[in-house]
Image 1 (cartoon, rainbow over the protein chains, first blue to last red):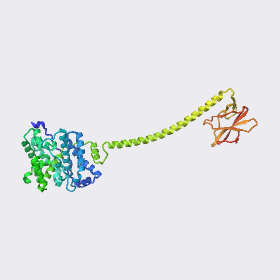
Image 2: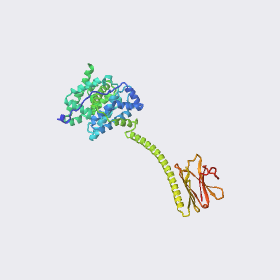
Image 3: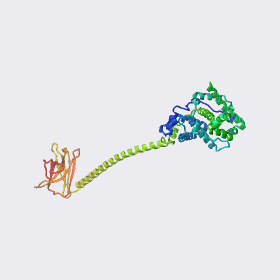
Image 4: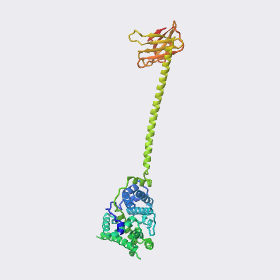
Length: 204
Length: 240
């Protein structure tokens, strides 16, 4: 029944933005130094992706613009904590953007339910370090897309709710009118499939 | 649980899906700076980034870039460029108004001068009309019958003075003016005023004040500062 209520609309496109560039270090240094051109460069590199992600999540262009601005402002203000030698800007920017959108969705719903996500600790710049070069490659993105297509409808739904709606597992269970244990199983199994498909690809 | 037992939990943790004790356990592992746990979390964050980066692309409005840059003080805000444009427009308008004001001031000055000239001319015409309208005013013609002389009339009113109306006056050399003389019978010429002709060779000159009724009136060409006595031959004359 929930499948009719929650259409599976996660339309993955090919990765169009490099999430890690060789000049991330240089760009990071310039951002930390408040270089006038660095922020323009960061926006030109990730602005379209961030807007697309946030609009996909909040489905309101005016709110999306506010949240994009908030995202880049937060990046700007927290740049001093980013490791310019080891950090990857793309994953951090996307994590900040997702969290801003989830915050908005919750405030728009006027709810902060039991078990709702606590997000701040997930976007600390220190966490986005030491990615292997291949971890964020275009090939890996294609593999992930293929892996997603292999998920069951239930698994796709929970993945979408987790990534783009920011629901906790308790909230998913309520939304889908399914037992919490069942939903947890779908979530764990779906994420494991994605991980293993990527690992197999890496081993080939 | 050891790190490998928690392998599946790191993806959940990275998405914020772990709650309560499960979450605290992961955080405790990460706090120990365990390299295995750090790698698991890093892998999970990498997968998240790849997933999030694959949304359908939508082009943001161009104003959004300006907004973002303005929020970090790098470029004018959305309305900043409007303010800058307005300031530029104001400057242009101010310059235009300044030029316009100068032009208007100049035109006003010219108009005032023209008006004063017109009013002076009107006064002279009224004076001439009054002069001509008096019964005691007498008239003497000059220039009639001559090949190319100045022509015109002297009007004499013993109480009001002399009115000269002339045409066909020759163009004056630079620095010269016409000067009228009142010549009493048996006496020397008295200066009776300087005047210029119009481009068409016409002139009207008035000598205000009582004048002897038996005089000869004459006009010569003199320096524009005037002469106490004629220095050139008589151009035209008329006797009463």
